[in-house]
Image (cartoon, rainbow, N blue to C red; front, top):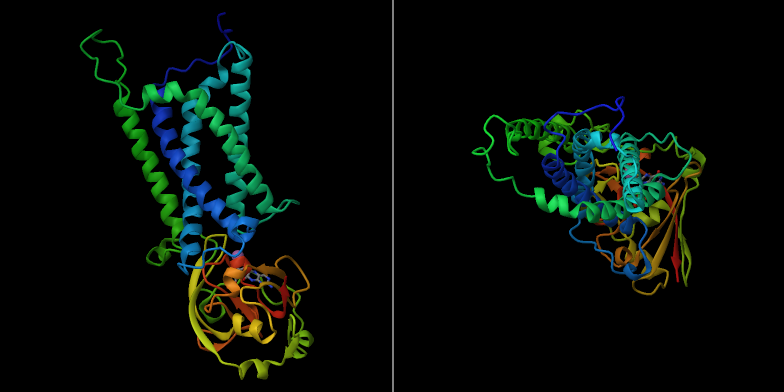
Length: 383
Ligand SMILES: Nc1nc2c(c(=O)[nH]1)N[C@H]1C(S)=C(S)[C@@H](COP(=O)(O)O)O[C@H]1N2
Ligand SMILES: [Mo]
C-alpha cells in the first residue's frame, strides 16, 4: 500500500537505525542508573518488610552520592531523550499505521513508553525545584511511572532486539560499490557531529545541576534551586518553622516524651545533661542538594535504652509540626541501633536554629533528608 501524498517524507540521514541505536544506548545507561538509584531511594524511604532491620547505614554519605547520581542521570536523560525522539519521530508517520496485531501492540507500548518517560522526567524536574502543582503524592506517582517505563521499555527492547543487534557496531565501509550513491556509512560524519553536540548538552546540564551536591562544582550550579551554603548555620532549609506551624508557645512548653516499656519525659535542660555526642553527617535531600554538618546531641539508642526498649527497636518520631507532610516519620531498627544516630540539639557549634528543628531533631547516617525529622517532641517505640 502506497503512503498517501499528504504524509511528510524524511530524507535526513540521521533518522536511521544506527543513530537510534547509538543514542538509545546512551539514554539506556542514564535511565538504568536513574532507575537503580531511584529504587534505592524508594526502599530507604519506605523499606519493604524483607529489608526491615537491614537498611545500610554505611557509608554515611551513601545516599548523598546515590541521590546526586539519580538527579544527574535524570537531568542528563532529558537531552538524550529529546534527540532520541527526534531521530525516530518519522516512524510516527509510517504507512500503513497498523500492519498486524503485534505491530499495534508494539506501537501502543512505544506510546506508553514515551508518554510515561516524558511525564516522569517532567515531574522529577519540577520536584527538583520544589514545585508541586498537582494534587497527587509525587513519590507514589514517580514510583508507579518507573514501573510503567520498565515494562514498556522491556517490550520495546524485545521488539527492537534484532535491529539493535544489527546496528550495535558501525556498518563496515562499503564505498567501493555504487560510487556516488549514499553508502551505509555516509552519515557517519553527521552522526559524529550530532553526538558531539549531544555530549556538550549533557555535559552542560550535568555541570549546572551537579554543584548542589558535588562541592567543587558548586559555583557552576546555575540550574540548582538551592545553594548548599545559603541558610541559617550554613545549611539550606526546605520547610521553615513558620511554614510547619511551629508556635512560640509549643516550643516554650516543649518536653521530649519517650514512649516505651518505661515511658518518661525530659525537659531540654535534662536532655542537655545526658551524655552528648558529636557526629559529622550530611543532610541529603531527595531533591538533590546535600550538605555535611557537625551535629551534637543525645544518642537515640541511649534514649531508647532508658525507656527499656529492646535493642534494635523500631521507632515512630513525632514532631511539633501542625502543617504539611513529614511531621511524623518512622525509623528502622538499623538506625535506632546505630550510635551515630542522634537526637541533635546543636548544629555546627550552635544551638539549633528554629528552622533547623529547635529544640531537637533527628540526624541519622545514610538517610534521606526528608526523614531527618525536625522539631521532635515524641519518640514512640514500636513493637
Ligand atoms: N518535621 C519536619 N522535619 C523535616 C522536614 C519537614 O518538612 N518537617 N523536611 C525534611 C526535609 S525534606 C529535609 S531535606 C531536611 C532539611 O533539613 P534542614 O532544613 O535542617 O536543612 O529536613 C527534613 N525534616
Ligand atoms: Mo528534603
